[in-house]
Length: 101
Length: 320
Image 1 (cartoon, one colour):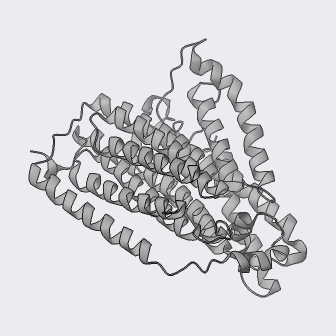
Image 2: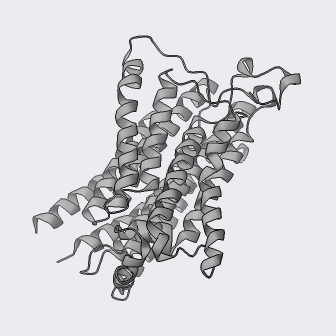
Image 3: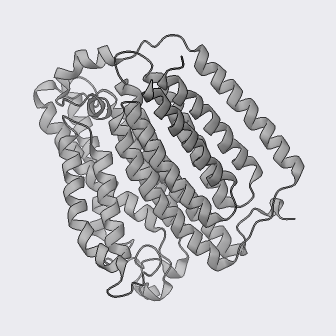
């Protein structure tokens, strides 16, 4: 019987894959920012689930690192969104030049 | 048994929401699914017994990131930017790469050696840390370096956001001009929710010493209060040049650094002596909460865009 921590760890692995898929294949930049966030939270989930496998409850050290990571991810997302909007304002496009048909 | 069933359903929902956010049609819909995804992942953290992470994920992943992305969708719609579907070869290659990545990660997870967690080490030092919540102890005492540098990373990100300002808009209030319908839902909630939000935010910081919560969770809730009040027109978004707001931005890192330097007297940088640990950590947390709240709110509001509200060129650089 599969336990919960393993289930969440494997879900995290699939999330990283899903995010990577979107990050490579989608062309609109905002979607790529979104996909990047999915990669990030999948990574956190793998990390947190790995720390929750024991019988002693969730390990506080990964938890603290993940909280730090979540906050930094938001800051990076704000910067990325700012860049996407500035790019769209300058070029009128939401995609990179090499991705335009 | 029923617990594992619940987890399986939750994991399926998380994956479905992520798929809809990454690959579904329409940017707006993608963002809405991403917000839903944040709520579901927060629930997953609850199931993993990581309540502090769940609070952070709910406040940030589902809350602030949602506001940020919805705002971006609205602004991008105005530019009329549209993307075309990628060619099939790209989709197939990406799918292959993603499948490979998932397989490697999943296999690695299953092959991990049995956990030798740090629970015992943390529990053994907890009495010296000044707080009873082990996660807060790790964040503000045992691994204070991480948290100090993180607070500086937040500042760097905000400087990056501000550097995207056009010259003519510099000095204007942060973000786009907000227009609110008087008596509408937003203007009502903008007045009702902030006091409740302040209460919850401050409580989370205070409770974080002994229970779930802490500077990050509380600071994020306070950031949401600032954002809501700004969007509802109750609070005028601060000018990026306003000195008082800038002092609030650096308060956390400065207090943290000073506390770290004071630790030199006790042995090494960032050493927190057990006798002073509780008041010291609460002081750092209070300053950090203020800075996190203001930094995140300003980062989500974005660079100032309203050139009309900017001071005249010869007055630029002057403080208000």
